[in-house]
Length: 520
Image (cartoon, rainbow, N blue to C red; front, side, top):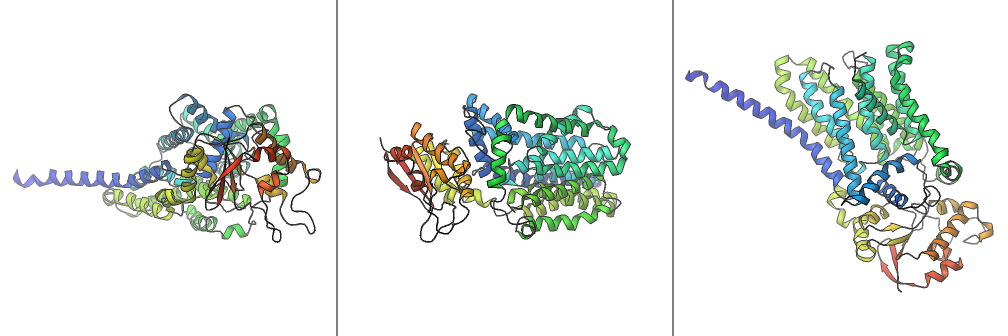
């Protein structure tokens, strides 16, 4: 009996080691989640929340609140805005709560959709750690439109794999995944490249007849048609007023070019990783789930490419499926290469190695460095100033910037009075310096969009004077000779603005901004 006593101890030690390694494999996901919940909030998300808060408070979307984004994201952002009005949460906290719930929902969907895939032990253990990591690894960009799309594109890809393999899926789960994905793809028209490629792959696998009988793509199409039908009914100003402004003033603003964007430090590496991995999907043992993730990644690349900006969040829906696909293929290959007993013993270590590799690749310039140094970065310093001087007040913001004005306004609970998120319409109206022309156009020389900005800023300012005016030292408009573009001088030509401006005498100087405060 004494000789057999060490065996239970050895088994207990092995079980403890396995549990420890599995817990360690989940720590990177927890770390990235904490980064996402720690200030600063993503600047574009913060700007959308500021508009949603103003919309819920009674301002008219796309008439008094003019923005290029289609209305769906504002409808979604109105949910935390409404929560903040009835719960002891501010809008940032309410938004983060909603996003965490979306992340948990996507993770739960993926768990259920993996049932029946016949995963090997290393594959199953690795995916248990990789899926939650991939969901939150974008950290600073969590909650962006691209993240929300990528979030529900993951379970959509797994559902497509089940459809390709003709695996039965509970009806409620299949419908929930399809509707959630359809809403995610509807956030931007570019996103439709993703379902187009995924559905094409399903069609190639099952054939046209079976694909046409599948009701799920028709449900998705029905969601999109209902959304399109709602635009002229509920958001007529978006189609008749905002879309022409976007075509004339926004699309050409800040673009890099379709080929130049491929060499940016964000899109270039993501495209390289995708191109390297896609040929591996031809391996017979790759399986349909990684192949569907490859289709999602390729569709997301097309979406990022046509936007030709090269911004970090455009890469998010590429990075998420690419990372999961890479880990999935590696774990599946190891399951086939290793003897069964050895694969089971090595599975926790394999999972830990894969999540550490993915985490190391995605510790980018945004996180965790933004969170660590937030207090000394531009948005942290601006936030501190606004909290001290105009907390909870209305503020006219004359700046071409989204960052760092947002999320500084959100954290200070200040509300912008500008009808656009920034001065993008004015920047679009002055793209260069016409020879011999005055620095500022006279009202009768202005285009309708420029006159709209000129008139509404002055009239809104005079009708309800804000507590302060935040002015960027860099207007974002090209300097013409020795004369820079001064927003205060520009708007002071309007009598209503000039009269109200006399009451703003105190100036707070910052590195890149001036804050003028009203002295009654």
